[in-house]
Image 1 (cartoon, rainbow, N blue to C red):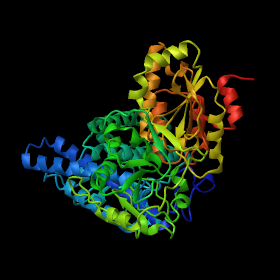
Image 2 (cartoon, rainbow, N blue to C red):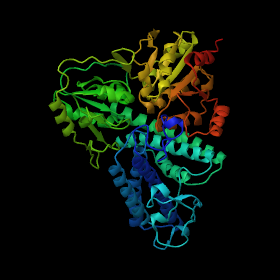
Image 3 (cartoon, rainbow, N blue to C red):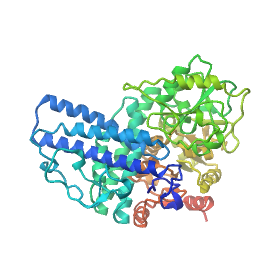
Image 4 (tube, rainbow, N blue to C red):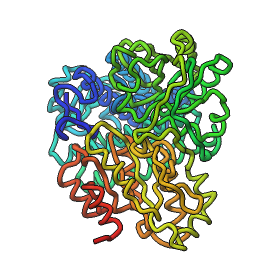
Amino acid sequence: MFCFQCQQTAGNKACVNTGVCGKQPSTSNLQDELICELIRLAEAAELTKKSLQQKKETDPKLLSRYLNTRKSADRLLIDGLFTTLTNVNFDDKAIKDYIKEVQKNQKDIMRCMPTDICSISDIAYKNFPTTNMNFSDTNMNSSTANINPPTCGLKDPHDIPVISLWDGTDDIVSLRSTLLFGLKGMAAYAHHAMNLGYQNDNVTTWFYKGLCEVNREHSVEEWIELIMEFGKVNYQCMELLDKANTESFGTPTPTKVHTDIRKGPFIVVSGHDLRDLDLLLKQTEGTGINVYTHCEMLPAHGYPKLAAYKHLAGNFGTAWQSQQTEFENIPAPVLFTTNCLMPPRPSYEDRIYTTSVVGYEGMVHIEGTKDGKKDFTPIIKHALKLGGYEHDHSMSGINGGHILTTGFAHGAVLSHADKLTAAIKNGDIKHIFLVGGCDGAHPGRNYYTEFVKQTPMDSLVLTLACGKYRFNDLDLGEIDGIPRILDMGQCNDSYSAIKVALALAEAFNCDINELPLTLVLSWYEQKAVCILLTLLALGVKNIYLGPTLPAFMTETVVRFLVDTYNLQPITAPEQDMDAILGRG
């Protein structure tokens, strides 16, 4: 296997024997195979579209069949990319079945080509790569071959060559990987929006473009241009998901959330999918079962339509990397709607349920119907059987706090924009820090706790994603009634942070980089990658990133980011704070 897509990759180089995340070589290789088949599907769809345009096809039945097949391909590309994200799917059989579904769609979409198209070489299309091709029906350990695109033959998807993902010069592999990992992150956001019935044509189209471009040879300058273009498209995707969530569940409002667990039966819901949580809450009404959020699901409490459920009782535990200890002997089932799932321990493995793209061999998987309905009866029965804690059970954040506050998305913050700008003008607020991103098990992540503790009393700390668990139970007080820690939501709610920053820049008639604002980010998986690329594409500079820089970024790529955007690797909290505030 070869995998270096997450922050915890072995030795900050690559996992080659087994994944630090628990991913086995067979799973890693299948995920690479799935990516290659998704690239082939994107190519097949674009080739077919090009052939229909080239032949000026007017047959309504053929065009209708193509559009319907492409609609299926939209979902396959998005969910397939999401499946390969870190800590999402460990189930080899599920991935093999998905690959077969993708291959079927490849054939279906190429059957929509006009009958006088003999082969892919008949279509005027940008050249395919001609070296280091990967064919998914060969052994994954020796899957490269030097071939040329076919010049004659049937319209077979396997005539479409796919580049070997990890072959090439270091800088080119680095840039190719950066775009691919960004696409994986954006797929997660598009997936959630699509589940709520929201789609953006430009975003969806870019999945095809992005995968086809991954399959091309580019200069360094061309790769950088593509990556910056992608960053702007991901901003549209985050905006789409923000719209989907707020129109479906209401604009988030500041809400206090308890960490203690009530006695009696309960269910824990982890991940990011608000629709899954909503479905479960509906099905558990009147059953006597309480529902608790976990990790990135915490911001659900801020959405009025979800908060209206009386049995949405609080938040269980802290960030994802602590689940193996926090779930030890838990007397309740746990539903994973998305990442981050870790290999479960024997004391609770019979209580783990997965749904959607999440999978783990031996775990019960809740399937959805084509119209998105799900039956959570097995989980509900299991919760009633286990019975929960006999007495109220005390739990806390990592700093000992028992109350968390969430719901400070852009709607809530900008509703008090006048108060915020006045406090900045008056000098009551001298600096704003955005401290957030992914959490993880890396020992250097206590940096973020110490950094927040050292922020001056006249500063605000905006936060989001699961990195906030390092400090979100701290009480840092208020400034003119504004809490000093403002939880803006899930990782996709980086959109909220950007929107607030842009509004402040407009209010002060300045560039975003001229604001008294510093971003101190933690990363772990590919959603953090797409967010970073969006920030860079929007011209945001002086970002502090840790706990390490990505292993997939070469020295050349890092030097470009440092020189162009002044991207800074974190050092020590005191040293970075002094540099940010110009002290000493």
